[in-house]
Length: 116
Length: 114
Image 1: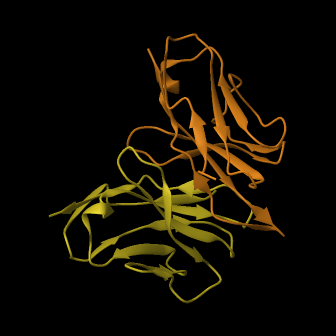
Image 2: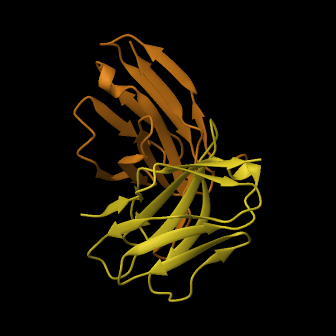
């Protein structure tokens, strides 16, 4: 297994367009997290899944954002009607939760979104 | 609410020297986890070291060690024998339970100077 992968690595779009990002976690990991990181800042939590269930969403996740993990494997993050303020690095992380213990989160390389 | 503060936006250290990065946090939880993550330029975030709040002994991983002061809510990272590959952003982070999201600080940019 090569770790968490994200696609695309870079996305440039015009304001108002929709974009979708994909995250493939480490295969046996049941938890998947999305974070957003703006330049010079630490990652901010957006949402996370346990298998296919979305368990928590941050207030940062406006109605224009939606995330899915349909089969408990890969996940997608869609942003509708993008705004310039959505420009950021979107990070995905996965972890294995066993017997109530959540182990280390492994991060992907991120998708850098630029909204013109 | 959980918060993590890193008061040193940038630091530099000579190769082979020792440097300490500071972190303070706030949480109302009694049991939680603290982390230091490293993010090299244009590369993925990786976990450097982890500390469980119920453990009094400070965590150590090779050249990396922490000074965990629970009462003061302080969690500093010491890097010994600094190497050029240690150049990166370092994020202090908090996870309030074993099954929660991670709250990150704003980061400290560390440059190791040859």
